[in-house]
Length: 378
Image 1 (cartoon, helix red, strand yellow):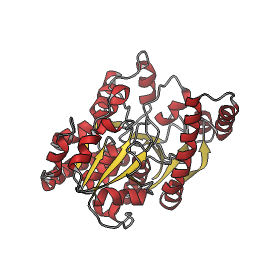
Image 2: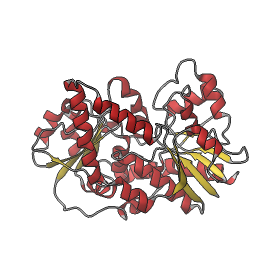
Image 3: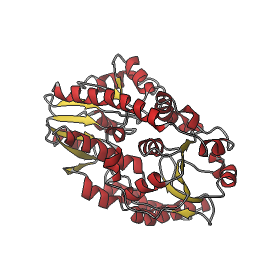
Image 4: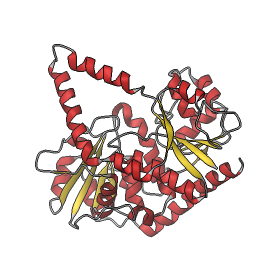
């Protein structure tokens, strides 16, 4: 079938976003289908963004907070040129001919496909009171097109108050529904729909398929910090990590998620603004990965690399469930860091990868069975 996938695709520094995009496309191709990413950007068109930026620049006087925000934005734009996500997209991903900034355009000029998929990542996090969010719920195209969700995330434990009817109306269009975490399953059930728990699409591929993407890097002993949504060094118990890791170099790749990318670990640290291929290599070659990122954890597991997961805190802590669900299912709760003392224990621990890989295989089979069945019933 010709399959149009709605997912997050156009960020320039979130490695999990771009790699989950590629992984689902790769897996669907393996099944004999012809997938493409629907270029849907619900944030609005370029003209509106340009005008907003212009107004920001022209606003007088700048206070110090505004100046710092502007400097940081420009700095990150320069660093993102080094990451070069655009080259990865051009080489490895297929897209719709049109770019859609509003759900109305999707309705008027729907992508030609036999099936639409709401792909992975937190595409269902937004409130359905904003009509453009409906694009992520496949509210477009002919009724004859099959509609499937594969591993979308709500990124919350409970849906927005007073919006259950909106969610129920959005989900009734689907022929098959799955979510990435158990909270998402419960949210769907609360509005009358049974959803299947599946794994992130990055887990559908074999390690060797990612190894083929990896860029070569020099071998040395290092701890890799994938700094996503970390705003203060203390959040990853940095002082303790430095002490127990004094025999290692530290390589840090900052990225933006809920919070912007920042160099927060001092000037004597190697900050590496990697391409997606280089990022995979950094995970693969590390002695240990330290991260608060779901995909940082996922690729550590795929490459069988020691890792420590630092849970998010505050308002964004609800995003922890997708990681803790996975670690619990793989009996790897021990890798969750509650204090800086955990690092020395994890660095010397046997992660029992043979056991983990076997359990991972069972989880992946369930996910593959769901997707294969959902597509074949069309």
